[in-house]
Length: 114
Image 1: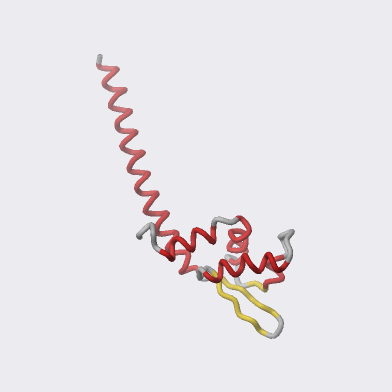
Image 2: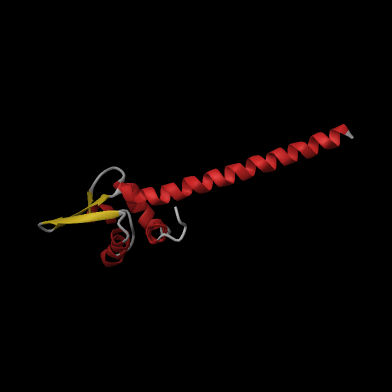
């Protein structure tokens, strides 16, 4: 995946904040009303709603209002872009670490042979 993808950039921007990551964590258990999601945080509801707006704008969550209750749910398919990029990066760094290990072992074997 292109590291400059707007979808990827938006997802990482949304996930850069600990409050928003905590909301995502809560929503892994299933849909929840805004009031329930906001309870663990010592911030006002208007500030909390801004966090939800960021998550909703990038597509990581969606909300639906029924009467006076707004319920949010996770859109796990939108996390897939971030997961895919992270998986690619993990593979790159594992290959680099493997090459470094092989190089260090060859140096050690060369020193022992002398």
